[in-house]
Length: 195
Length: 203
Ligand SMILES: [Zn+2]
Image (cartoon, rainbow over all chains, first blue to last red):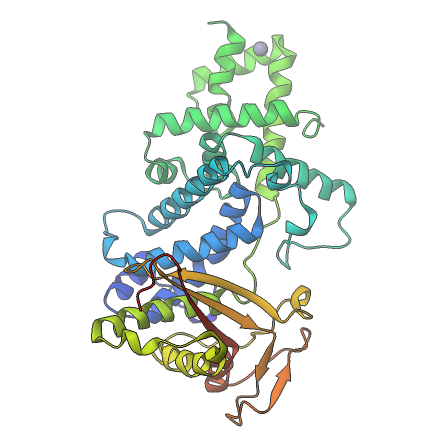
């Protein structure tokens, strides 16, 4: 988060309201606040960083264009995650139609794997990096329905209530879907996570 | 429903502390007689820790520059269309470079309130390529116009405002220009290449 946000930090809702009133700097703060967390979410969703970055761009363009559509009854975070999630799901459907979905699109591609500076550590042992790649790949093998809620809950650490609003399904359904998704992953990764 | 199936339904609630005391005790009692479920629980806990600890992926350094360019083009197009200036944007490919730089300089003034990046160097991997990034944008109102925005590796030295002085980025060199020159860097650094869709040209 930027320096300009120290002190009494404006909420996301303050910022979008200011933006709706024509304050472009507020939009800029929104971009700074969300660009990396959305990138992380979309990258894990699509498995490819170039496509992910493009899609995060598109998400912000839509926020810019459709700023009037945001209404204060909803949390801003759930609104922007809904946009990004829908774009990602559309992208997956397009891929399927184009029969684009080859093994190399599953995110097991070394050069696609650019992690941020603070996360990158050359000393990190090979085992743990391989482990990360295997987990990344297994997430990408989940069906989009499970992948989305697992990413939102267990990677992005959002609350069940937020996820319910983003995915637009009842709270109980979110919980059971997350639970089933975790069991699917655990089944695939049991050797890796057994210790 | 047997106890193992019941376990599967409730295990996330159990791990996240969402179970009533009575159900929690039933789960723990089940673990004593069923090693498989006890082990699955431990594996799930480990899995959740691994997922939480996955490295965070970040956008590339020029993300905001490109976003601003896309927004400014979109706003400017909307404005020009509105004012009936749209046709004046017309230019041909061989001459596009110079016109484009002039136009993009105009476009950036549209969003003067945007912030000032201090570093616009391309990522290391792109240094030896002529173009280091780009994207296209379809004009929504007339789908037969596609705008390409490409970012060059080389940029003009802006303090002199003279395109004759061309400097090349060294990717390791931090460019810490002042507010105005940083903004100018973006301007001259961005080129619009406009092409029409051959199916139904609007001109
Ligand atoms: Zn059992």
